[in-house]
Image 1 (cartoon, rainbow, N blue to C red):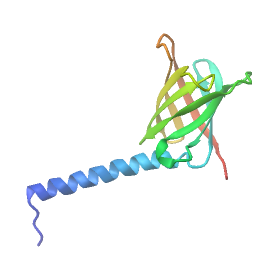
Image 2: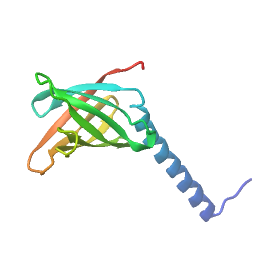
Image 3: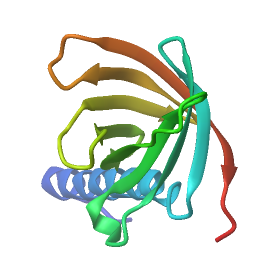
Length: 134
């Protein structure tokens, strides 16, 4: 029968915890390896968000969103860690105009959007509607 010291058991559990965290983080990123379209609401507005991993996989995710009825696309860039998503948006491609913080549960991403100055916040909820076959 094998016996492990308390220190060895602690080391094994720490390694398993790190591996589980790495697996959860990688799983979140893997969701966006192919472009993903999500639809739902930002406050009372209907939106569509398109997300994908950046070319350099470790650099996070990027994409854009638009409000239905408007032709303007707003750029998005950020990261996903496990089920937690953090994005910054830019209306002009240079300056940060807002921040998204949410949690991915199944095929639904929900959280809060906040203006760059922090004065306006809105809840958002979007659901995956398609994954590209690219």
